[in-house]
Image (cartoon, rainbow, N blue to C red):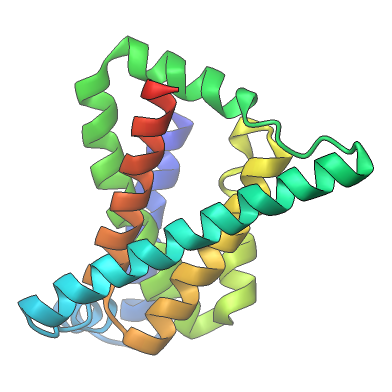
Length: 183
């Protein structure tokens, strides 16, 4: 219930903010929040490139965790906490879980990148994005989400494409789900 309310607020807050504080109508607010497509080829290539950057960031993070854990005996990789929660959600209903991921990724990109990045900048929007992913209770996941959020925020700021951010983020999440299912 609380997740549904937060998700609804992630859609309503940006629209209401622009209509109230910038005195724009709904159509103008949506035009501001939904950047114009840059064409199929550019959006597709950008989405794949962003996914590659996110995947590379993930691999560097895993190697860094491994090096730190080996050299200091500090355990950073506590992703089993994430595995338990995701595994339970997938076991409950895989189809519903995948549909919710597809929808939630768009809403996250709409709120955190399209709304917050232009107003609060890369770091603050990423910190807020990270805060909203705390539910798993995993330090490794929070570090990963922060890096993911920084890459997504930077990409949006440079490319101004909600489409590229959406598909790059979606492919990344779907790959993570495949890893959780297979491993």
